[in-house]
Amino acid sequence: MAEPANVTSPLSNASTVAIIGAGLSGLACAHRLAQHGVNVQLFDKARGPGGRMSSKQRPTATLDLGAQTFTVRDARFAHKVAEWQAAGCVAMWPVHRYQASASGWQIHDDGQVRYCGAPRMSAITRHLADTLSTFHHASISLETHIAALDKITQGWQLKDTNGEQYGPFDHVVISAPPPQAKALLAGWEPTLSAACEARPQRGCWAAWAIFDSPFPTLSGVDTDWQSLHTQHPALRLVSRNHTKPGRESQPESLSLLAQLDWSDAHIELAPEDAAQQLLDAFTSLMPEQTPLPGLVDLGAHRWRYAQPAIAGSQSFLYSESGLSLCGDSFRGSRVEDAWLSGDGLGEALLGRSVY
Ligand SMILES: Cc1cc2nc3c(=O)[nH]c(=O)nc-3n(C[C@H](O)[C@H](O)[C@H](O)COP(=O)(O)OP(=O)(O)OC[C@H]3O[C@@H](n4cnc5c(N)ncnc54)[C@H](O)[C@@H]3O)c2cc1C
Image (cartoon, rainbow, N blue to C red; front, side, top):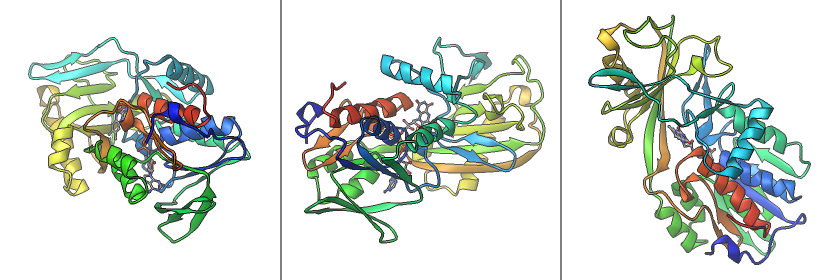
């Protein structure tokens, strides 16, 4: 296993690469490689790209159930976000943040600029997938759950859960969260496998609640409040999806993200129970016990691998056998980390300057 400075055979436009996972890191890596002519095939087990930046489509509303917002610190990522803003798939949000404490709700301004996907978080990864498909040497296979890797004389072969085979490929990038990556690496690359094991993940419940009418004015709170941070033992963050850019016409629709400790302790709950408990937590925080409007839709999604328990510092990992790992966990736990990890791995595999 080596850090990227040790890449001895950079990929060229004659190379073929399989990327497992079409979340932000996999898409960022695919873009970097495809821009330099490398033949890239992405695989994702889900119906659409996005991974933990995906959004849930309900009959009356679209809700972000993974990342709600993201921040920008790195200059390269800032440049990319400016591109996405120009393309119309990113906007600043939220600007009216609150926090709930024992003494009620207070405006919460930490000075950080935050962004979200517009008109939904998954618009960013959709934009990346769409622009990737304009390269004739790049493709994405969705609803394709890769179950195993096999090394043959001509390179790496992939097999999905239906027994379908893909390849051979010169190189395989795995961008799935480390426990899922580890399952694929089994037997092939013990050092990469150990790196995955060193990145245990924490779970997170994310519920949605859609109402038949807008919330009443809450005592001492601006009517256009957009997000609420809480110290409640179960509930961490509430986002009002209908206040996000491009979703103004949808009804009152909340994402309710659980605390990580609570999620880990309740990860095997039935989704309807998790959803009810998170909604009850929010109700208990309403100023002056203001009643909520009529509930029309309530549910929850369980993220078994929401974020790393221990943040990495390597960004991505590479092995001379033709296997690499990228994803947020190898450098942090945020959207920005995912993009930097995938883009950085792409640069490294091309033998270019590395960050
Ligand atoms: C509830 C929640 C809240 C969050 N909030 C924030 C936030 O406020 N700000 C922030 O910056 N970040 C936040 N994050 C983190 C952010 O979403 C992630 O950092 C980022 O989306 C990770 O991208 P990734 O590409 O590394 O991984 P993922 O998005 O997990 O992508 C991995 C992909 O691999 C696919 N896959 C896995 N195994 C296989 C297989 N065997 N075959 C085929 N496909 C496979 C998966 O379907 C998935 O699409 C949050 C995450 C969660 C879950």
